[in-house]
Image (cartoon, rainbow, N blue to C red; front, side, top):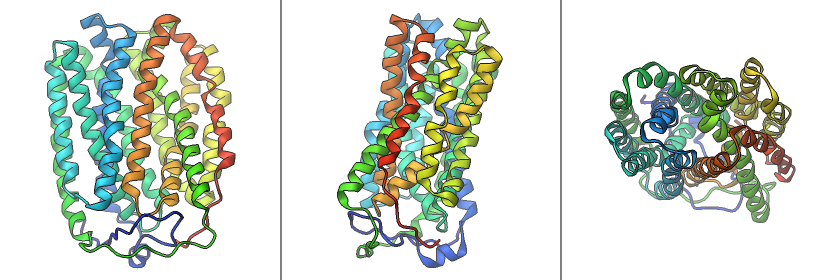
Amino acid sequence: MNKPVVVSEGTLTESVVVADVAPAAKAAGPAYVVLAGISVSHFLNDTMQSLIASVYPILKDTYALDFAQIGMITLAFQFTASLLQPVVGHYTDKKAQPYSLAIGMASTFFGLLLLSAAQQYLVILVAAALVGLGSAVFHPESARIARLASGGRYGFAQSVFQLGGSFGTSMGPVLAALIVVPFGQGSIAWFSSIAFLAILILWRIGRWYAPQIKAKKTAALQSHPDAPSSRRVAVALLVLVALLFSKQLYVSSLSSYYIFYLIDRFGVSTQAAQMYLFIFLAANAVGAFLGGPLGDRFGRKIVIWISILGALPFTLALPYAGLVASAVLSVIIGLIISSTTSSIIVFAQELVPHRFGMISGVFFGVAFGIGGLGAAVLGKLADRTSIEFVYQVCAYLPAIGLLAVFLPRLPQHKR
């Protein structure tokens, strides 16, 4: 993990720069050990986060919570991350903090311990917020490290990073079914050992990262002559946020309420429903990995087009499918719709150069915030109508992908 990759922090410009990774680093190719370490850390981080949604049925039965209160737990967790991630990213753009990842993971560690012992609804909300705080610190700086270690293959590096998180998210329901359901809420404390392992890995990555940081800021690089104007950049960022909205809100609807949907409509057990959720989330992980390299190869704009609009026929069919067909459709939807995440984030990073931490924080934060706010709103809607009606409404969300027509064509850079 000692491969030298130099990071330089330039001033904010209005257009895409010619290059932002040292030529020697590009020639050397990706730092695979670093990418593997940050991806494994993302896996551990998101595994712990996904436990919160996976134990909703237990919390709902134990404390007699309604769907609106379940949505508020998701909001407490995800809105904390949404509010702080851009702030963390903005700060680390100015002054990198190589050991902040390990320190932030400590918040997740204590959040899990508190959740395992919580006996009151307010304490559950505080515990969820602590886990969200750990996420806020983790994502912006770890996305920057993934880019630094990319060797110029930005989409590939972002996909490796996203793969760890998506696969970690998919493991939450399985671990909840195998451990938390049989042994109860107190068993959540066992997962604090995962947080401790993540702290050790992130501390080691921090040791690799620290020498790469230049103490003195360098001048801004020259803009590409074919880069979009500042106005087009602003419009493109708004479009990317809207596209992320359609993708993340739909995924949030399945992540938070798919278990209840399967139980209510098909009468399956809680453990069986958690396994079906795992199938969907695992497909998300595969899709998230494939999207980045495809964006590097064919262009990010076309991947964004296909991945969001391409899911629309299958999301429209899901509310009317049987149990087996629902599982098959969830796999197809997960593969297609999650392939857009890496392309959206890298596209945004290329629109606003040298502010990778802030942009990563904004987009990860928006994703978390939309998921949290959407879960709360969908919970209210489910209480007033039904879970089936929620999925009939959410089925139209991928149609927002039509907005991709407003994305500019970015100049091609040598890799």
